[in-house]
Amino acid sequence: MRITPETIAEAFRLNNPADEFTLSLRSQHIASIENLDTTNDIFEAIDLTDNDLRILDGIPQRLLKLKSLLVARNRIQMIDPKSMQSLPNLTHLSLINNNLKSLDSLKPLAELSSLENLYLLDNPITEVKDYRLWCIATFPNLKILDFAKIKDKERADAKKLMENKAVYERLGKQVVSVKSYHSKEERNSAETVKHLTLKERAELKRQIQKAQTLEETERIANILQRGYY
Image 1: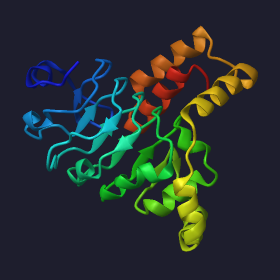
Image 2: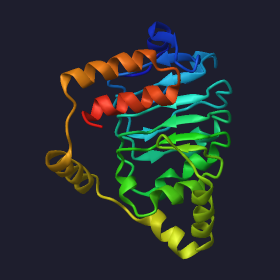
Image 3: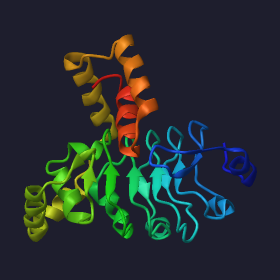
Image 4: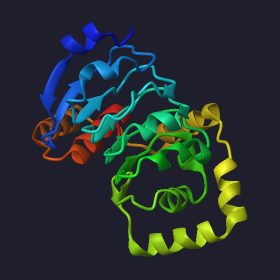
């Protein structure tokens, strides 16, 4: 499905738990981002969760009001730096459950000068040693990474990593195979994970309805999608 001006005009709109005016384009088999200029920059959040995006691009110049972009559960492997330059006030980005295979593929996010909350769980890159420190070093304005507040010690360790240029660059170039990552996830799930019961699912759905922050909504939604804590 394409994002046409008509799609945008007819899309569901709501205020999310952070009270951000949101354009919802969830679960519509969208393969590329386009025509967002027809929103007239009235939305504070855009939700493209659960689609078929492979590249995070197609964002028009200067969406000044946009604070939150949700693109979890797509197939994103690449991020366009020019599109990131169009989002100077974006503070919240969810890339959970995509196909990002190297830390260097995240570098375009450095264009997001206001980014404070970044979610990358369930991507192959999370298997890279010191993945978290690399992200903290690369995006020094972050306050929360993968639902965990960044600690002072982590910032100190990240600074040391950045100073060791050879190690920093080697980590960035390391590529994790999507196939091997998902095989490991499936193996771990089969061997060690206790899957959610129907009662637990019902309780999580109740909690998501009462969530008061976007972070809490994303965290619970990710648990429900994975099927385990």
